[in-house]
Amino acid sequence: MPANLTPAYFEAEKRFRASETSEEKLEALNEMLRVMPKHKGTDGLRAELRTKIARFQKEATKQQATSKRGSVYHVPREGAGQVALIGLPNAGKSQLVSTVTKAMADVGDYPYTTKLPQVGMMKFENVQIQLVDMPPITDHDAHPRFAAVLRSANALLLMVDLEIDPVAEAREVMAELEKYRIGLAGMKDVPEEVVFQKKGLIIGTKSDLDATGENATGLKATYGEEVPVVAISTQDGSGLDELKKRVFDALEVIRVFTKSPGVQANLNDPMVVKLGSTIEEAAEAVHKDFRRNLKFALIWGSGKFDGQRVKRDHVVQDGDILELHT
Picture 1 (cartoon, rainbow, N blue to C red):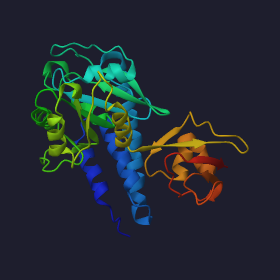
Picture 2: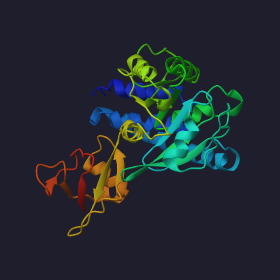
Picture 3: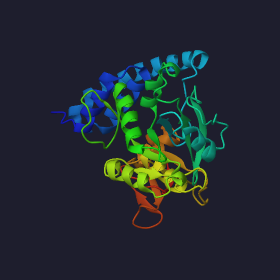
């Protein structure tokens, strides 16, 4: 039986072949397994992928252990997702992290303030999102493993200064990204050497200094049809709520809640799963034994009615409440 593999599978396979670290290869392999059609024709390939995943998982664990001892560029993921901030000097990256996460980031009005990744957690409604403030992308002395961090992040925020020439800044940052074979998903005319398409946003900072709004309008006119563009100000707080929502959407995750029979769900403690996850995949996120032993589930939210009994392949939606029965 033919495998009938999808374009999404071949795109993930392309990223796997271009990856340089075990973590990157592991991420691509998991994506290949996720998008692969499930039928007898793919059974052998699925088994092969699982073997590779197990091997690269061991290698990634070893690399992480080494990184924790000797590299400040190892940034373990936390929260609903990891988002890396990139830009030219004085683009406002550190000020944003300081404002929305309360982290003590180095902030200055002089170039190359940030020499090492600075991490903070940004709250969006009932989840925390990890922001990683990277050194300026043009400070090549500061990032021997710059590409690995960007490739492993779930999304990128490309930061530009609305006070000066944001379109020119965006082009320069994208040109630097292309040197690492990284691009923003959705962009047209992507060079062939770019094999890592990352979800992302273009953030115009210092909108309070763009008095007429002309620079923000020009930035959105240039890129808004391809990549979400948000204008913000950390001084007056404008655009920050939209930024948080857009960042959450870029992660392509949803929040689901679990409950025991007769007990109310704790809506302040969601479980974060990938967009498009099924009941059985959500059950595995609780514990692998739940998926194996799952008999049925009741759902509040995306069902036809509250408490509906649904099958294992039911696709869950953001905000669903699940009652898993094993």
